[in-house]
Amino acid sequence: MTDTPHAAVAVIGAGLAGCEAALVLSRRGIPVALYEARPQCMTPAHTTALPAELVCSNSLKSDALPSAHGLLKAELRTLESPLLAAATETALPAGSALAVDRERFSLRVRELITASPLVSYILKEVEAPPPCHRYCVIAAGPLASEKLTSRLQQTFSTGALHFYDAIAPIVAADSIDHSIAFPASRWKKGEGDYLNCPFSEEEYRVFFDTLREADRVTARNFEEARFFESCLPIEVAAERGYKALAFGPLRPVGLIDPRTGRRPFAVCQLRRERASGESYNLVGFQTRLTIREQQRVFRLIPGFARAEFLRYGSIHRNTYLDSPALLRHDLSFRQRPDLFCAGQLCGNEGYTESIATGHLAASAVASRIAGHPWAAPPVETALGALLHHVTASKEHPFTPSNIHFGLFPPLDTVPVKRKPGKKEKQERMCERALMKIREWISSLPG
Image 1 (cartoon, helix red, strand yellow):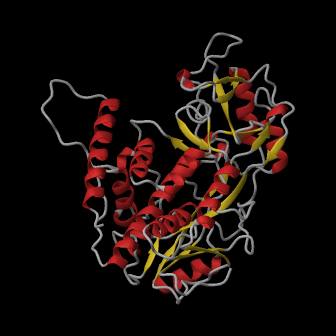
Image 2: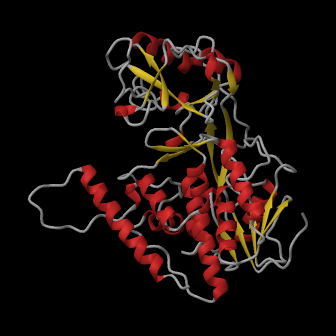
Image 3: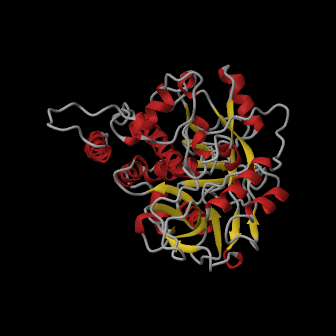
């Protein structure tokens, strides 16, 4: 498809943020040119040319309240987010989490894009904001091309930071020993949505020692190994101590091994990749081990002696901007008010968070086109707290973040006879946020 100069807005990147922005703008009656470099220019992590491809986990994390991730989804549903609706339509059983069938989800998003008469989907690498559009949203993602990120660095005189993001392996369901692995969700939430591979302490010790000694992919000279805390490679997490995995990604809480009637020492959880259940993702097993070592080490997981790996774990560099120094509260660049940024490139981390900043950028652009001032969501909301971190964080150096309650302002103090517990505090924060987001929506022009 060719360029469409008549489109008021260009969106660079058909990932989660870009697709959300394009669909929200088109819903407001605004013509959009959505540019995507794939398949002309593939990234080290993508495997298809489909829009909104999920390259790491297939989980959008918790969908339950009270949790910060569940709250962000609740707010986006209140805003009628098109991508969150697509995720719900293609959801897989995953306990209290929202996990999707990757292919069905991307195909559904493509259907929404191609069905909109106001969205022109252009498969073409863009090295700079196209001059033929009035506004531009850069949502090129953490794997934006070097040409585009270099142009941004030159334009805004700031260095692009980076960190590593690791992908977990996928295994064939029929290669797992189901006499060892058992279906269950923690605390019996869900209908046995996960497969669980239980470790005895001796099995855990052997696995831990072998993992610590395994060979890893060597980073290139110009890349500095800086990992995002909530997405640590399994071998990096193991460096923190013998029980770091048993208290982290291999924690056994809420699970009982039916063979013994007791809680295992540690558990590797497997989450299905597709509704058909022919493949499973190793939860928390992001890795930079070599392929040969992945075969050797991960087959020490109980039930994995004959595991068939459909995808090996890998490592890639994620790029993001020093956005608090560059962006205004509406995600537009201070030096270029006609240019906006959304998604992981602007410093949010996570699938739902990328959808959120894509939605907010589109909302801000639509208000700009209509000639109305745009007010950010209140910081008491998940959307507002995330946006405040991205545009006004005081961290030096700036670090991307998922949504979490630490980004929210504290609750107003009220006289009580007892100190509220953690769950009660979170419930009150969620109640406050949902009230505030409704008030914000009602205040929006039009």
